[in-house]
Length: 593
Image (cartoon, rainbow, N blue to C red):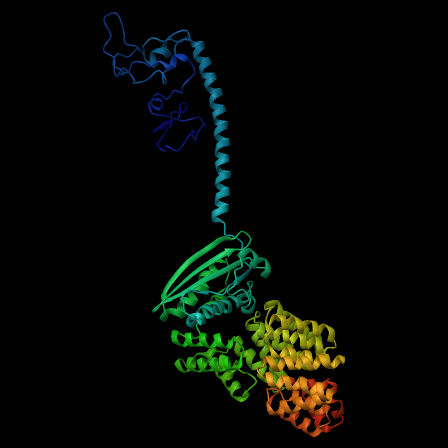
């Protein structure tokens, strides 16, 4: 217990130091019972005798304090008030007797002195309380005020710690799924797959990655599969300080894969302090299938699809087929089928997309894919509608912006096309396909030198893409650099896996010059038909085979050749421009027709 020496109020909270009424320092122990503060003096250092009670006074005398039955209070010298100056020890007596013996004026002086001390202690108490409030306020703000929302994040490729390359699809797929979920949220800049996967397998610290990608947070993940168990460890890092913002471990069965992905997306968005509407929360945790096996097959399909190679596309298509067979209502699985070799067997691809939209008409990927297919039908109004719908559903879908830019480029609306393609590159700056479109757009809009620089940059970034060198060949042809055009065409054929044909291309130019090269290329294109009929038509038109060139162009229009729009500006077709059949093809790129 503690007591105020001035107002005698008792306190039972041992943490209090000052009276809440008058601000005086509280006393505790025996001093609190007396209610008297200590005062200075060497006499106080000497112990007093403890007297528990006083016997009745003798005849002719009285008890100290005028009360023969009043008990004495146990005290010590340190707690009793001295009766003399430093000259000697006081006699043994009670506190009440001492006060009775004092002169009146001394008592008044004591009261005045105690008043001054009380005021001083009161001021100290006020300052102490204010200080406590300030400190408490700081810590309340520091620990209880929500931190600012994180507005940008890089979900780094999850590390496969299972010791088996066969599980790589799972770590990659879980990364992609989380990127896809978070990218649909407004106000959050999520770095694209191609941006973060450049760091896969590389030893880069968080500070470097954060600076290069310009993000406020980095999410690292480690995936391990042990039999039927999946163990995932996540770590959210502030790249500026490299401090851990949040970490957690998830231990689930493989059959819980779908719910695990939803749980991760929800937890990460919470730690980013995102303010989500009900619609945003539904997007974040939306299930496209409840069948974990179908979802696992889909992830395997995407794993091979991302390799962007002929034989790998066949594997991807096989896994997508298995996924939709396992769950016929899996809309994303049908989109995967539509996007695999999207220029081939187009009626079938369109059928897949329409089926996906019948299952889920809110699927942005399906609308984007349908917009691309309408673009190859040269149905410009339908293409615009579907691509705009895809962007409306997910403004951060880079593929929708890229395809919209391609549509505008085919129509000759180059400024609008540039805006769309640059928007796609803002979202996904390292996407090979969009960077390729960018190089072509520069070329067809008359910026040949810039186009060559862009395509060479892409060739360094993605050296396995044959199309880059094919278009560099066109650019050098336009500039009159025929040896450069031949060499780039040969490189394109080599990368496509036909080294013998590449040697023949070089040999034909060395032997018979540009005409020899054109004839060799026309023969190769006819023998190895690709997705475009426009390319062989270029070589045939240049060597004067007009009818055969027109036949290839008309076939291209029938199947939906993306590159057919080149007939509007390529000088190789100048000899055909007066032909009514050729003019009918050009009209396909006039929306008013």
